[in-house]
Image (cartoon, rainbow, N blue to C red; front, side, top):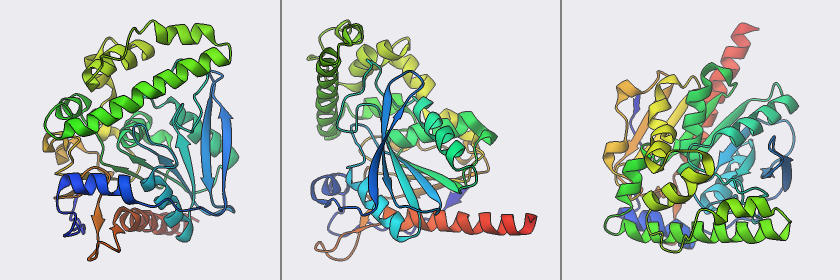
Length: 340
């Protein structure tokens, strides 16, 4: 289903790059109340760090950040604050090595890795079998979310899911980031990924995980890598068992999983996203009947800033996301009352 959008870009942020860069530079981090960190040991004897916000028995929202992001990313931090005010608890899954400390294996995280979100979901469901739960993912986290929803189909008990600025076709997005001003984003992300790998090697040596450190050393010199095609071919594919970047992109792109999603899901994509082209946006016939597609003309990549004054930016996602959640909470309550 296609949804008519309410988003209108701020007149003072009227192009894709301003919408994308402004929040990264200027969005202030909010000091969250009722927040704490929890560490879970994973089935492969590694760990993931969770950042919680809110206590009690309110509905719970799982949040997934983007590439090189974390719970400290402005869009995550701001949304946790908003959800708390709207009566939702939230928990951020910091992907492996993204919580401020490197994880304890050579293994990283990637766009198609749905093991950790599934492990987290199963863990939370064991603790809280009857709590209404939803899941929201941004960019890479959105791709992971949609792929997981498609893989699991009817096996999940979620009242809603929302994915924002998703690189639905990874090969096309990797190529787009090789052109024009988009190379600016690519350069920053590749540099952060190289740092991530170097921190990981140092950490593995420090904790005596020499064999794990060797797995990374065997990838070779990463200093010459300049594109995602190179990085994903040399690092992601080799570390995670893919037959090169093309195989990784083909198996991990969430566009191919949209028709088996059983959870009520909202997909928000901007036509001017500098991380991709319009061609990655799926046709309605590719969507299951549970997926709603909201396409905006502007908004950049995880930007979506509106507001009349540069002194008072308004982050539209912080309004739109709770609106969708509240709508489906209402439907859940109606469904529960009619069946009881």
